[in-house]
Length: 300
Image (cartoon, rainbow, N blue to C red):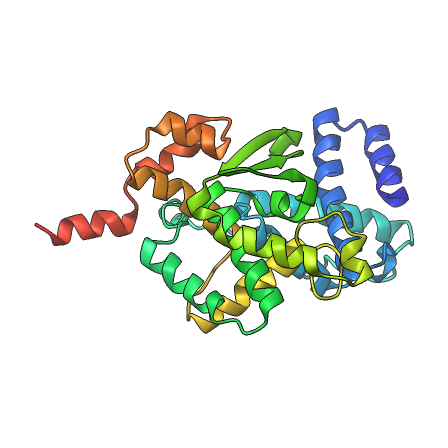
């Protein structure tokens, strides 16, 4: 992060607005953290164009960021690496051929189809249930249930620890740092908890030191914590098997909200369960999607 601090100091000396500097700090810091976690190195001089493209794909498919947000990150990285290039820190600027994408006017239509239908949810899960590896099957089903029945974000799933799961008739899930660092407790009803209970039992039977010493609820076969990137790769795998494109972790959270809306739950209750700050965010689940509008027209 030393180069980032130097860059921010440069912006300050150039008289940039504090809010602009903070925006750079956030977007570039996010990239540097992702890069180190993904590659295992913090050597900024080794960043390649493919690394940047994978990061932008991570923003789009794993974090479900809008194209406008992705463009802001791209612009920040362009300025940052241009600075590093001028300072002689990097010999080749990885941002040279990375372009800011146009925002399509049809994006609003696409936003209403973020969720999966009940049939699509069942279809996807059926392929996960076919997984022969017990470790992967039990873990993956539990992860999907947390997103689909509790509305957890992928970052919240990744950060869950064993001590955050409180079992009684239902299961209380402690989210220590949700969006904007908020602490909350989300409840999983007993009727939805079969897979999570099965994974917990299996997780506690693991004897390898990387699992015994890890406090995290979800692990990979190689590490004591399952990463957001690992979750997306898992979803990609079953999506291909099910012949379903664009399956991201956030689509299950969207489906959680849409399922509630379809069940006739009030918009304010959905907002609270989804932990949205603004009810405007929740309103897309109440408004009929493009598919639903077409279906209604076909009934005329």
